[in-house]
Amino acid sequence: AQSVAQPEDQVNVAEGNPLTVKCTYSVSGNPYLFWYVQYPNRGLQFLLKYITGDNLVKGSYGFEAEFNKSQTSFHLKKPSALVSDSALYFCAVRARTGYSTLTFGKGTMLLVSP
Amino acid sequence: DSGVTQTPKHLITATGQRVTLRCSPRSGDLSVYWYQQSLDQGLQFLIQYYNGEERAKGNILERFSAQQFPDLHSELNLSSLELGDSALYFCASSSDRGGETQYFGPGTRLLVL
Image (cartoon, rainbow over all chains, first blue to last red; front, side, top):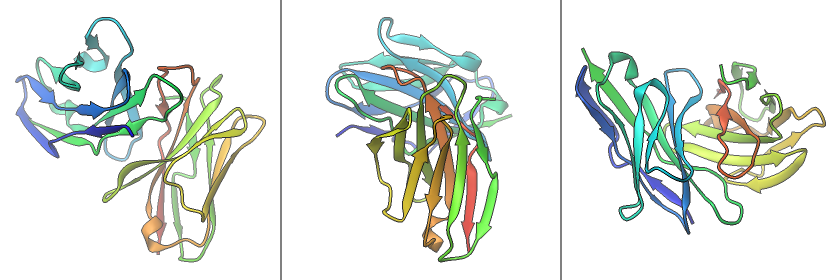
């Protein structure tokens, strides 16, 4: 079975500082990995995904994520946080082999203070 | 705007009742997914349809059912509703080719009183 762990329920960072939201996964074989963001009373918005190739993936709104196979991690990063980045962030994984559905982590609330 | 539409936006009903949630996928997407989001369970996958046929089933209760119609829109039917069914219900769609992205609708907020 595949799973995703987001070890932090909440991450607090000051505006202008770098941010990291952690994600580790467990899946059979190589994964597809995704990050989504959810603003209050909205649906999930796609941020970025890792399919293959460069381990550093760049996505929307200046976010990036680094795929680390040995550590089975896919941490979300941004060099300089904005107050408007405050939202709920979800990491998700899907196995490449056979057919599998997308499994989401429990989410991490990011709070960026002015 | 993801291109996925869901109706209604809000739904308030009583225990024991039945409701239907509707989803229209993005143009060209053949797969529709249903998810339930609640505070205690997080985001749970319920069921997937691909081009009218059920493809995968997750944590969907027997009281719940879904279908996808020839025009590719989908409906999620929730019956014999209980207080614990109160949640946000999301629909997502994708082209379903390997590492494709699922695009989510704005959700339907269901409150069972």
